[in-house]
Length: 616
Image 1 (tube, rainbow, N blue to C red):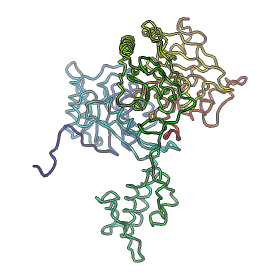
Image 2 (cartoon, one colour):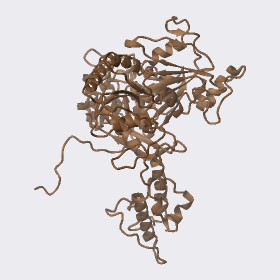
Image 3 (cartoon, rainbow, N blue to C red):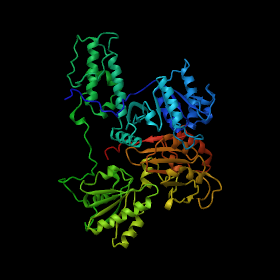
Image 4 (cartoon, rainbow, N blue to C red):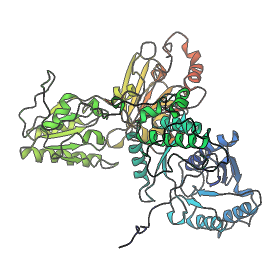
């Protein structure tokens, strides 16, 4: 038997690079994303693109104009004449790299991927192979999008934590890789990991970093055994007793004791307590005069009040909905926008006490499905683009088949079943087969989504009414959208995938009457794009109609389901609030209020839920 574990190929050597000279061959949104990641690692960025600054995407052009990156026109570099056999890019890069002043350490190619705004054809595999060979000759690791066999390294799906109260970035980052086997899954796993960690995880790292720095201040520079070579994670047993402070303690002994104390509190204190360490108390903490922790301050799991376990005492509520008879029935149930705490008591009762079979829409989150007892069968709708009608019929037929066997079926829909949830179609279908479905309302994302984003759909002084539309009609047909009314909020469901067409309909003058009913929207009208409303990985993009398209592109991957909220109510509760939108001649101040709202930027992104929702 082997004394040590045998290596199993297929994994990655995960490293964290900083202060590199990073070369990017490409001009699209992915190149911009790579550039931002490199800039945040304190690296120098050079972007190579045919046509130079005029050929790159808007974000890269902006960064170049603000001296954050350097853009080099591939067509202007010395190299062989370009022909049908070779585009000459590899030779030009070879000459550039060979010059004494261009010590590139990492490289990636992104223009193998055709971007939505690209005016050039995607780079061929042959061209990418030629460039990769040049980089390997110069010992430069390279990543090539969509060609894993050419890659020396891959990018992890990363998240950088921020301070929950200030929004400032922290040192804490997490990265997930599937080693080229499932990039979309890597993003999903990353979101799940981030959602599972405490909101103040990043702040705890910031505090520990300052505590470590303070502990090291007591070391004697150059002394043997000083903390210049001792870290709080260097000992295999972090719970070894920390020596008590003595009057004869040397500087080195003091520094070592402090670093071991930092290791112990990093290992055992609750994250919330670490995040709350005050800088003015750190010296006392290191000397043992602060930081005693009582058993009552240890973090304990908080019940959300929704789970039901056999043996739990049950108290009947005045609001309990008695669902009888328990067999051979069909319930159309709304799960709300996603957060399990927003389930109604009736919905929770149907899922946990009465269901024999749950037929669920595919966007119902796992947190809701996990409440269903393990013995209950769950089937997820196979509703993909182009298959919505077929999947709908499949679920309705499955419900009738199970009901005919005497089972209780819960047809689980997101939001409220009657708000673009096809509840009416199912009610009529079940009725023709002898079943009168019981419809249990749910909290609609039409109202809950904006609320979680800090947006009221109506607000005195900003919005007197609201209107709800879908971004896509039956069988994919275009729908008629309402015209602009300053006092009205427009909520668009299922419209993110068709954002360009929606913007064209809302903003363009002279559009046909079958596309818009009323006047065009002003380009500066506020808009919020809300993704995965009420869930831990909720994301909200705030911008204006004129800038929302590049703002969405800057986000990279999308997080369905998404919704759009358009109108002046979007900014009405931001910080100090703005409820003077409907005052006389208020239009004259619109540019100024947008400037104040976005703080001079073109868009702003908000991640996660507000503090206080974690235990609900």
